Length: 408
Image (cartoon, rainbow, N blue to C red):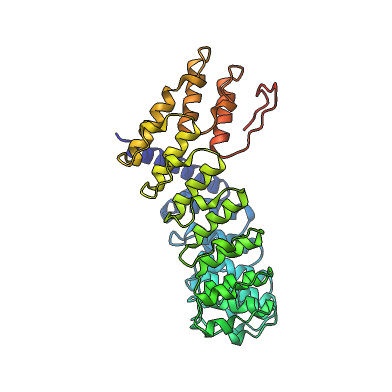
């Protein structure tokens, strides 16, 4: 018997026990066992029957195997609050739609304005919220609007904006959103849209102007969304990216240059060299770690090959044994791990076998094992620190600290 068969058997056993338990509970609450069995309900449906009986409601309104337990739950909760949703369930509304009808009844709005089974539950949500906020839902209750469009029109009405400027059904929600946000902040989105600029690029210009960063000149030059975002974020954090901005750079490349400038490294080492953003990242990290990037700063290396050489340099192993273009990234990784595992400089003779394994696992993960390679730490403490380091957490251990209070 394979694992799948075993798991199925366990699942069936659990389901059967749950069914019997719920059946007995319903029987104790006054339902006939034979009747319940004849209905063909599953254990989840029986749970809703049992909960309804406990609350003293008329469960006969949903005692039907064709009603899912989700729908049963909504009907039960509604009846517990004095709301009868059975009429809507009979009309074919699903459990998510029933939930929106329930919320509308509770908030005392006219649910007849959205109890159309053709509305998605999310569309119902937007109409319900509009009714609750007493706005004119007729401006967006057209079923042809998707719920994202409905949401943008609703928000505009709630802010007393002229939604007629963007409520054309042919405008997707992103266009609607940008016009709405532009109207709210005083930015003329329509001006740029009418000139044919991409809505996502316009969004970056708007975000920039809201932070007193003018990107319009770059927009006119043809910079796209990702590039504009990279420039905006750099300027937003006070990074002088101007000398390196080039329309041939992708947005993520601009971000790597910006990170390098912010870190105070010589970004000329990877700018204008034909590197992609992943290669740029490996060189940037190497410069930040003060290692010799000459071993791997060659455009012919893939970023993964660069990473393997960088990790080796950071581990202070002899990367010349694998840092060649004739080695694939998989071969590089294998050799690097072998060299790291064979490096006994961090493995003392008085470490136990289990402690030594924690150090080897750390070396394989590329973390600084010196932080926990101390015989005073138990295996559990070493594992705890290793897992934290692998997760990118900061582990600060002061002088004389023995790790006894480390907890996950």
